[in-house]
Image (cartoon, rainbow, N blue to C red; front, top):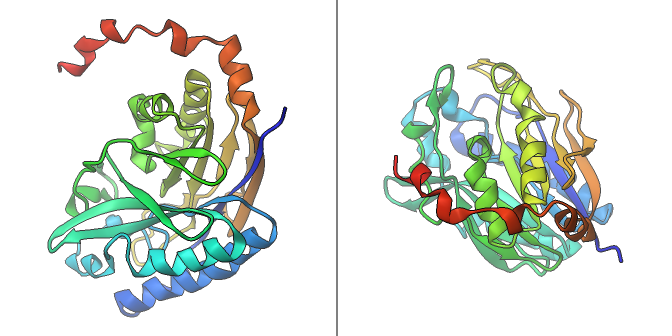
Amino acid sequence: MSRIVKCAHIQASNPKHDGTVAEIKEAMIQKHIPLIEEAGEKGVQILCLQEIFYGPYFCAEQDIKWYESAEPVPGPTTERMAEYAKKYNMVMVVPVYEKAQEGVYYNTAAVIDADGSYLGKMRKIQIPHTWPGFWEKFYFKPGNMGFPVFQTAYAKIGIFICYDRHFPESARCLALNGAEILFNPSATVAGKSEYLWELEQPAQAVANGVFIGANNRVGTEKPWEFGQFYGSSYFVDPLGKIMVKGSRDKTEVVVADLDLEMIREVRDGWQFFRDRRPEMYGEICQS
């Protein structure tokens, strides 16, 4: 018996490159609103926005002015998004820059249920600091909330943010915690990571018998222009097959119907969870 959930990503370019931090932030929110409404009108049940959706990927530089864009979670932006979640009866994954207290910031994704209620948040666990232009340790403290799973109106979902996808433990923890759909909001540019974009997460979907939605922004962002965000947001099924994929350069809503019954069918065939031997893996946690 099918159990279909209509899911979507929004992949978008940044519309404003100058002005105050507040103006840049609001411009990106305003760009997203009609896209969120489009998803709602299409009957999307779970919608995922891109990493720190309301701004540019400011980690291309190290400047304390971007701390101004951080806010509490829950807070003003999650409250605004909750209005749309409730209006369209749509679960939303809302990645923002979280201010936990003065001087303590996280790369965070909030989860809002279909009735507009706040379910909780996930803080990015692994924080990169690599050349060129991924100076994230300047902005983010490593997440300290583990890998929570959220029981939404439509499915059990988990989140791992951008760089977390390079660590197979992320997906495994979420799947073992009961997640059926994993969402990976990202900001990644053409270059060394692109060939991994459609390699790692299909493999993780197979290894864990889950659906994964990978989300990436599009365009180049001034003044840095350190690389092109190549979009290509997609959903992959538990057999590792990409179901739908967005364009490389277009702002759009990427929609897929996920039949969650497939999880049981795949796991009954590939008994990876039955045959795993966690008692033998301790040594990888010792170094």
